[in-house]
Length: 404
Image 1 (cartoon, rainbow, N blue to C red):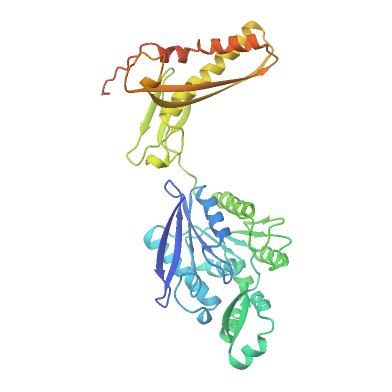
Image 2: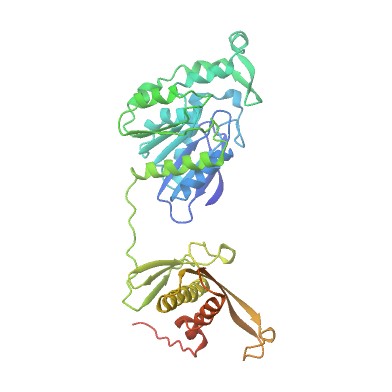
C-alpha cells in the first residue's frame, strides 16, 4: 500500500486533510471512507480497513471532517449537513484528480452520512455502513445532561470519547431535519450493513432498521464480538476484506491481460518499463518474479536467484524421493532448504578460483522416515546427483540472439 497526504477545500473554502491509500498496481476502483463521530482518518481501524482494501486493488480516500483531526474549521460550527457537504467535496476532488468513487462506506455516524449523501454520487454503485445508526438523531443520546444548556444558551460543552467538544443547538436541530429511511429506500444502489450484535454504542436494532429500509440488492455481515471502534486489528482487517470482496461483485470484471505463451521445454520472461515485476511462463505454467523493495522492486515474486535456488532445492528433493522409492526405503518426505550468497575466493578451500567472489549455495536436507544413519548419509551423497546440481558444476554456455 502506498499512502499519500492530500488536501482539498470544503464548500466554505476550509482545507480538509486526507490520506489516499493506493494499491501497488493500477486501482481497480476508488472508495471514499467517512470516519465515526469525533474520530479522525488516522484511527487504527480506518488504516487497517484501507490496507485490506488496497490489497484487493481498491484505492481508498479517508479524510478528516471539518474541525476534526488536521482539517481546518471549528467543530462547533459543523453539523450532519456539513458532514454530507464534506463528503461531496471529497467526491469532487477524487473525480478531478483520479476517478469518481465507485464505493462509499462509513463507520458509525460516518456511515449514516454516507447513506444520506449516496444519492448525490452517481458514480457510486456500492454503499456500506459499519456500526452505523439508523437515525442521525441517535447522536443526541451522547449529549445527555446538556439539553437544558443547549436550549437556554444555544451552545454547550460535552464530553465525547473522553474529550471536550462544543455543540450548538443548530447541530441538534439539523439532525432532525434528515429523513434517512426515505433516502435509503430510494438509493437504487447495492447496500451492505455491517454491525456487531454486542455493539454497546450503536445497538444492533439500528442495523435491522437500515436493512429493512434498504431495497435489494442488500446484504448484512455480522461482526460478531467486535466492539464499536473495531479496536482489535483482526476485526478491522476482517471488515476491509469482507467489504472488498462484497464490492467486487458490483464492479466491472477485471480484464486479465493475455498471459505469456511458452512452448514445451521453453521458459519465457517479460519485464515492462514500469518496474522489475516480471511475468514468467514455463510451458503452460504462469509465474511472477520481482526484486525486493529495497532495490526498487515491488516484491511481488521471488528474485531470479531465488528461482535458481528453488531449482536446486526442488531437483534435490525429487531426486531423493526417486532414490528412496528405488531402494524401497521407509521414506516420508525430504525438505531441502537452499540459500544463495557470495564469498571471497580466498575463504573457499575447495574452489579453483583464487581471487574475487564465488557464488555459493548452502543446502540443508531434512529427511522424514525410519532410516538408519547410514541410509541418511547415503541420501546426502545422492543429493549431489541431482541433475540441476550437476548442471551447476559443469561447464555452461549461454548463447544469445536478437529475436526478429
